[in-house]
Image (tube, rainbow, N blue to C red; front, side):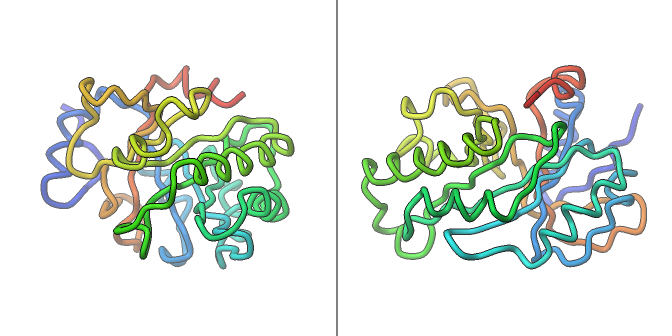
Length: 227
């Protein structure tokens, strides 16, 4: 019996171990908070891809993005860039900022835009009409530049509030660190982020609390994804 090279804390480990054969394509998500990234070490853990945080809002750039974006090219990992969406600035200007920071190549994965309720918006969510408009503006600006449709990273709450029936052409990166996505939720997810507290066990890996992600498909489908 094969032993998974992934270790996740508490219940997430047993959850992933049970389902690992169903999701052969595994990935991680990183940002400056993870410090120096040993990309060769990550690659040795049978990881196929990595998403690297690039930008947030209209002005912020992740301090480690440029070096991570360059150094990952020394591996076989497919790379993708992510943007943290702000409700406090226009979507179009956020898209312009992302395009200025991120230079893509043919084999890169489609960009991800992370949409979550933060700070005061946890208690007082913004109006749906405003979020949908600004998010569509962001997507259009980035699509016009990069030529790829974007992936929306959301949890069930954000999906139901803002995304459902509004972004039918966008793939979904579903965040649920407690349960496997169920058919009852009827969320057509392409990626599943199942833990934010994962550790990699092989190689010179020092990072703690990495985000672990799986692709909903086989390796052949993943190779074609985003092309």
